[in-house]
Amino acid sequence: MPNYCRLQIPGSTWFFTVNLLQRHNNNLLIEEIKILKACIKRVNRARPFEIVAWTVLPDHMHCLWRLPDGDTDYATRWRLIKTYFSKAIPQQEYRSSIRIKNGERGIWQRHYWEHWRREEFDVKQHFDYIHRNPVKHKLVNRVVDWPYSTFYKYVKAGIYPANWCGDNSMKIEAGE
Image (tube, rainbow, N blue to C red; front, side, top):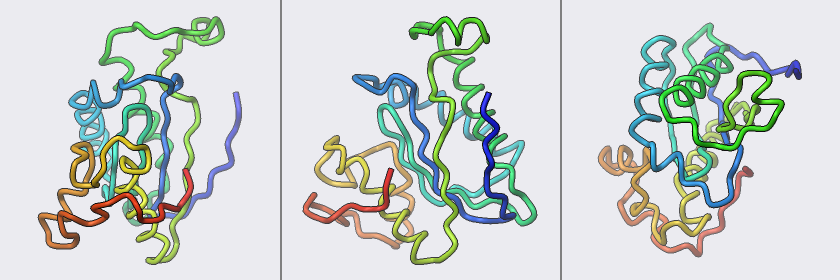
């Protein structure tokens, strides 16, 4: 089992990409969005973190979290979200012999990508990237048309207009 060396900066803002193991033609995350949201809320109640931005796509998700002062433990939060979600849905996925031997489900990629966001400009770039991602993947033509996102919260707060990034001609960067 790998021993990941993860950066530990208390109270920081982090960008994450979390993928399903089988990404091709897999809509599990949006098909089970209610369960996923319940798992995230459950973890957030036990181990609080601020959700700055989040977009759930059919086979992966991107988000920005801000951890409380003095807290660096995003790894446990992700482990719990993945575990609760995996236990809440029926076992129908393919599992390799190694996963069966280890008692693991075949839902999530074991790892995830995290990037520390140190400057407000960097946070803003990733914030925009997260919300434009459904357009990037050609799931919708306009950001406002994707229902599995925190974008609506920012439209309601007057931070973004509903027609922001209304066409998909805008250059989309930040990595995945």
